[in-house]
Length: 377
Image (cartoon, rainbow, N blue to C red; front, side, top):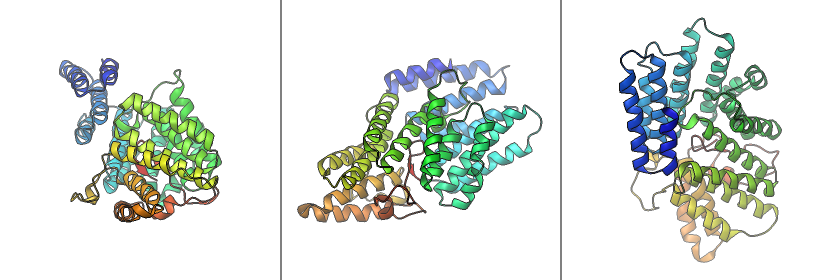
């Protein structure tokens, strides 16, 4: 039933198909309420949360995940999956304090549990470490993130499967802090597991599912290759990520805009490295990205503080502003765009100017865009 509902929604990617799929899952919940286990209900709620998230209903998606915790007898695996996804959704919504609270709650839940399969418990603990480490990284708390990601090798060796989000988040930390060799290995591990049909899928939801891992790791590896000056390979991978996003979410989804921003930044790096000009290409990509991201106009009265995906929008607008500022007739527009982007930028590790600066690959900090949570790390 769950697989049928997910395939139905994704086959047409329309409001009607998502609504029909949600009805199927709601019927399943009604059917199971009488004498079924809490885990059966919880799995349906995780699937509903995923569909609601993919159709743009972020708050409703969160509510379904919160309902899982009302299932007192639900398994530890189910509750960890719900907390992992809730943390991810709060990160995407820019609710960083709530994200840290949820990630901490996940550890408390694990510490208060007893018994069960030791190997399965270690996998859950590694997942909890990864999502909390990602939260600290986004908050700019590198020492706290490093304390969680420091045991990366041991975590991955101890988990024979379900390593996707663990490897991806660890890789992003290594990438952002300049360890590109380790990051590349971790991204490739995440991609391998996500593509390996023989690997048992982990119980997950919303922006933490296997499709999101594959998209995120492919895009992150493309960014890494760009930072390493391997632009041909970077373009191939980022184009592959773009195709995946368009196929999974639809042509006009905001995650398509996130990847277009990464491609535009790659062209910016390539142009500087080759001492060439790609102004028209960059401008076209930034315009498309901002359209998909539904960026407000420069004159909008909407509060920048309440803007979703503002890290990525600020990156796109900041890069676009640089393109305009080198054109004498459009410099004024570029300056206005630059000012808007700087006010929207909230990354605590670096300024927007530093994020857009092209430096040697060995130097840090490097900005890495995470497509799962649509944030600049």
